[in-house]
Amino acid sequence: MSRVRVAVRRPWRLAAEVTALLVAAVVAFPLYWMVLGALRPAGEIESTEPRPWTASPTLDSFRRVFEQHDFGRYFVNSLVVAGSVVLASALIAFLAATAVTRFRFRFRTTLLIMFLVAQMVPVEALTIPLFFLMRDFGLLNTLGSLILPHIAFSLPFAVWMLRGFVRAVPESLEEAAYLDGASRARFLWRILLPLVLPGLVATSVFSFISAWNDFLFAKSFIISDTSQSTLPMALLVFYKPDEPDWGGVMAASTVMTVPVLVFFVLVQRRLVSGLGGAVKD
Image (tube, rainbow, N blue to C red; front, side):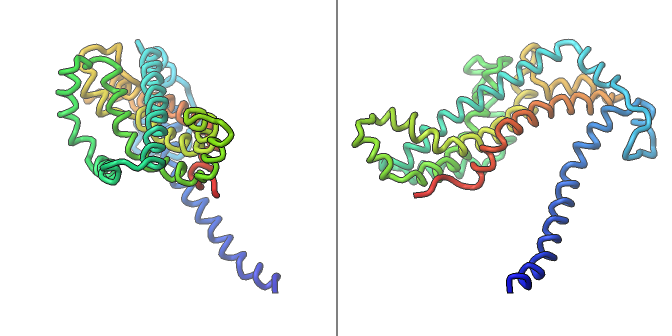
């Protein structure tokens, strides 16, 4: 009977694996085309008959990117913005998720609904109000004008996701810790935080990608001080309406993608467990 079941399941498993490979190929193809465009010589990029390979790869596009004035500063600014957003949003979301899960207080349900409503508002609709807000606070042309909005936009999703992880931690574990003499702060940082760490990693990935790839806020809030620009703004250097440097655009985009891939590789194990669920009672 078991052999019959295996024989029946194998075609479905094979179909699932083939489908997964096809989906992965479709997702990876834009990345391949981006890297290919960065390695192509100018003549092949401007060709009217593009080919999915190049016979003479070159690093000239990457050389132009790294020789670009202040490109290193843009890179550091992006790291500062993305790193600050990840750390601040993770800390605040962890504390907020613990509060709305473990404590009963007035308007708790209303607060959670407001988190959902905040997710529904398009970022573009809030750009102009945020511009005037940053102007009144004197934060225009500073990295703070990029960090604060991204923290605000990443918190609703992070709090909602971490609620499930905090709720999955048995209350009996908390009571046992208190009986053993642990304070609330000790339980929070020594017991609860390691248990919800996979969820924190999962939310941090989304926060990092959103802040790292941001172009709208960087274009809107960094007006005159180019020393505060981030990497997405560096793409404008290579995009000229009359004669765009597509090789430079693709090379700069490839350089921008590398930190995201490195960050993902470093946290992939905890990310998988974070997306899969939390601890069980």
